[in-house]
Image (cartoon, rainbow, N blue to C red; front, side):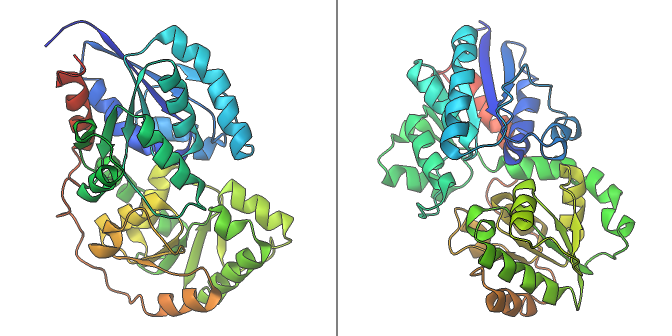
Length: 367
């Protein structure tokens, strides 16, 4: 194996990216011959949604912050490309690593591929089949551009093979989100945030909503808030409100007095503390589907499709149409008990980040 120094650039920009980056950054830090450079696009710019994660997850400070901020998909993607291209050309990395399925992911992959730099996609091969989701478009395009496809599950690899991507690009490494959960869970449990909020363990419902399909339509958002308000008559409902969702609530005149506990966005450890102690989670997030499956916590995902079907098949997750009656019926049927934690799912073992780095640094194709 060559001892020549190599440079790997990781590009992140949104909350889920940081959780996926953390175990990879830890593993890369053990490799003396690798120069790891982190670029933060600034796609998420709220402190609680972005920079706080770097401290909590012990991620090195980014060498570059593109400061892109919010905007339409086209505006955000274009601005990331415009600002990342000269940095990428100057750094001339051996590999650009991108994470997940946000606009930062596909934008950085496009820049690197056009410069002739190999792209590695962490969490490759996930598919919902729903082309109305911007994330689905980002996933498919990023996978087509990537030389290294690091998959979290065997079915993700099967998706890539069906799309006729070369098998020698695909590496089944496991779930980096679970790496971060395993690493952070002891500290999160010590926080016991629910008690600080005045509710007991397994005595509350935790809610997150941010997808455009659920929050951009005032009628649908109002219907979902009505369902949560009905639940709050019978149990505590804690709802950390995403900035996008808060904006939509204000614009629709839906910010009012609720029984629901509306909270500010939470850093990762605080959010994980609540997830671990919840009786039920109601969400439209991808990552929470996996976290609740690992922890054995009932989860209702307010979507008609999921790119993580393993959470429905082997975990505690259930897809629910985002309608008031459907949400209330599913919540009533969720029960109070927990399933056995799904720690037997293949390669949900806290070692995915190490496998990614081993594939990059020990593989003949790289070194």
